[in-house]
Length: 434
Image (cartoon, rainbow, N blue to C red; front, side, top):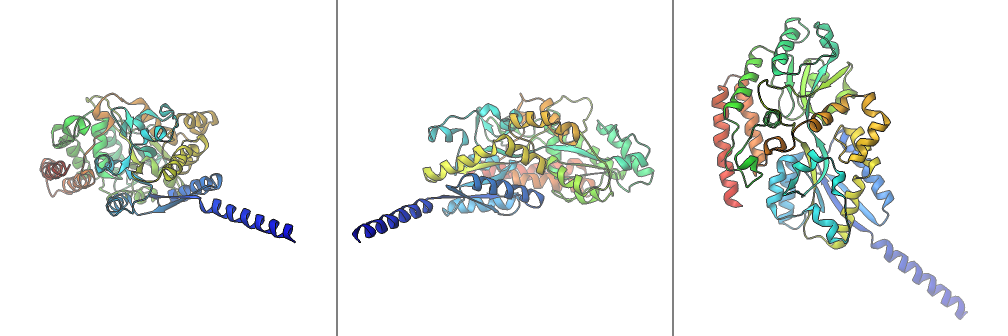
């Protein structure tokens, strides 16, 4: 009888200890801005991580678009309710660096007694998010802009579908032919117009702001209203008058017109490739961004976002976050992310695996943007990309300037001067606070 009681007590004790072990599962939260088809890929990756890490529960929450997510994070950190991990788009980089809210990712392995090979990540991506050679946020959804074009409409207009435009002069020539042939009412539009404007500076190795694009100290003055910026916007304004260019609105608004065959060319993020390919009932082609002749070569600049780790969490939580960041660097996970979204694979072994598989040979559209960033310069601040404290607001000023110029409300110079004056005020206010 006593032996039976002892057995029963032992069993209860074992169950109690087992229950305690289960209760010690580390729970972490990740805020992100991935919606639509990208959300499904995020959910699949998170589900796999949780299944393969039974001691961790990662809760991934969609918290709105990029700007909303950044605003919510800043507010949450101030009230002590921030997530363990947050996705922030590239224009929020300086804000996060100045926030005092994050643990630089390059420090985390040492804090946990580990080592990590940072050389495994694709260099143009890590360059954007590094300061003094150290990586502060983890590459995740990196993209750049490229030119999409409708091969079927090219054929109808008498253009060679295998010879897309390489320069802005050719964009104008092709665009006029497309419009004059009656194939489309307008030939070209942009996604993220302000970002495309910034791309032109990086792509032609032109500084966008002082202090070496804000990389040798906080920028105090923008330079986008100088001769180069004026030339770019004058070109786009002329194309609008010729009905070659159609202002398509912010972010991904212009994608609908392209997929619907209303325009023949679109400059948009590589992250739209999967969605555009699935939605189009025509043959989609892609090529490098068009160049302005006579200017030096830079590089297309990184867009998308990266992952930032919140300061002040427990060591157990930090270790769990680090496990997820390492998981994202796994070859199969990086390949899954790239194939499902069009964002770059961020680690070199994933790129090699895709090459070995023949992925890029089967669909060279996925190779276009990758070749573009790898073939550009990496050794100048202009080619690496600009950092601005109030970048979110400044990009909106750029977008508004483009809209005012191409609609004829202001001349390109007036529009850029107005935007630059407001941007410099924002920089002064930001720098005073920091």
